[in-house]
Length: 73
Image (cartoon, rainbow, N blue to C red):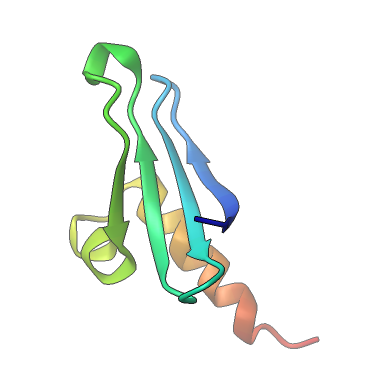
């Protein structure tokens, strides 16, 4: 599977979140890579589900990125 990826947020505890787009289908997900102490199991979450989970810094960064799509040029 070919994907395009952009890092969203890298937390102080080592968790990482990235915005991922599957090249073939065009579907977009958020990939969460937890630190090893949290189990280290990478998950892929639909964008809407990710945003519903709360208002943490990782969600705020995604909303900021989305906001750049409508900024005046």
